[in-house]
Image (cartoon, rainbow, N blue to C red; front, side):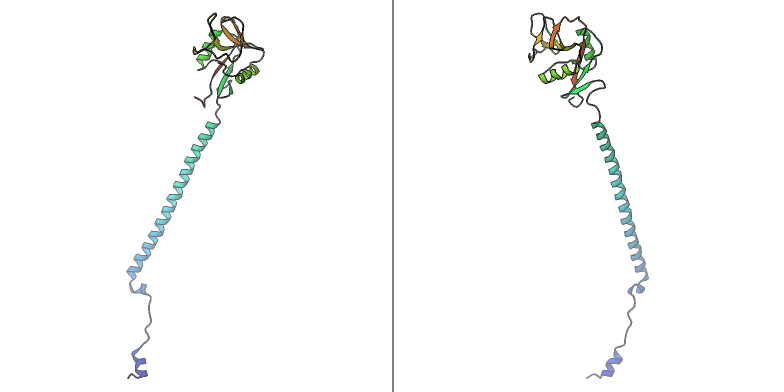
Length: 192
């Protein structure tokens, strides 16, 4: 068999060296690839963060625009809003025909009172003066709205005139040439 000393001679200690020293070119390529990978990741992160910031800025501007739209008045200046309508109470005194033309020039009509609640609102805000409203009739005929449809008679109109107006007691009627204040109405901007 084998002698123990012989085995010792046959087995010499071999030092293991760093494998990277064996192939310096491979080590250089690996380092370059690692650096490129890290650089690519950094560039990708910068692009992602920039895109997110730009997105937030654009979204923020849109939200700001929406917020300011919400703050816009539903009715024009010097008009009063009530139940999705805008009302204009005149300071001048004119006849019924002029009053309707004025309202029409502002995209409105003389007010067409549709409910008792609306009538109470108008009576509260009109002050002590009489105001023309959008009801008229031919002598002996039923009351009609500005658009020509027959009125529902949801409250009484006193008097024998052909044009209706609001006074302190409710509604009354007079001749169209009488001068009074007037009330215009139109849908608020969110209804349109």
